[in-house]
Image (cartoon, rainbow, N blue to C red):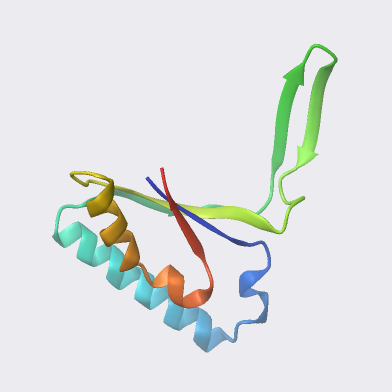
Length: 104
């Protein structure tokens, strides 16, 4: 699982052209993974929500975006091992746009 994390407001300063360029590069990356039969699924995630947890004291609700960095998407891929997954991740255009990818 390739998890994509980024600053919550990373895209807020992008021009429409930058956003379109980013989407096209992501589409090309996804198409390549599909052609190679390496992609199980990929999805962006909304940058809002609530985190809930429970302890002996009861329920606690925290806003999802309390930290600067949030998970903004994922790629679920087929790979023989972590090394192969890492090499696949390095081809992801997300890195050109200030994102951090984590393999899980």
